[in-house]
Image (cartoon, rainbow, N blue to C red; front, side):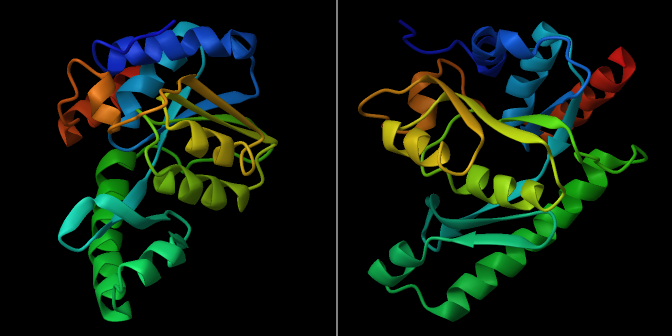
Amino acid sequence: MLEGFEDRRDAGRQLAAELREYAGRPDVLVLGLARGGVPVANEVARALDLPLDIFIVRKLGVPGHEELAMGAIASGDVQVLDERLIRTLHIPQSAVTQVMAQERRELERRETAYRGDRPELDVHGRTIILVDDGLATGASMFAAIAALRKAGPAKIIAAVPVAAPEVCSAMRRVADECICALTPAQLYGVGAWYTNFSQTTDDEVEAILDAAAQRG
């Protein structure tokens, strides 16, 4: 029984054990959600001898309570909004629009910084293992799956080290498969299940992607 993780690298190694059936398959691609999912995804890719790339999603935080997601946006002009939460908290449309514009600018900045001169992401016909460091609301993962579906992958597997049980169940309804290594009854927050949950930096993401490209 898992009790938690030392850091994102440890989480990735433990998550890879749940995905062994995909090891070495030429049709499989591991995608890390930027930024925190990238170190986890890197360990999955290394352990399973699979290629690694990045997929960028931006959470839309509730104004004044940014850790609470009211939705997310992803590449491909995809947006997912939690309309129920927005109504419950009486968040005005102008505030939603403002947050969305701000996060879209950051999404575009990260796409430019992380992709660099690497070729455009091609997922058509491939099996995608989509990795994040955990699921609290699942907003980022939902948005990523919606965006990826537009590009015609053969299969999408959502894979995370830790998730709220109800979110993991909901994810199984939109992904072809969902792997949640740890599903505590009380999540308290993804970071509570890591000894070290320091923020992943742009430099770390770029270094991981460069190393993955050199692995081939």
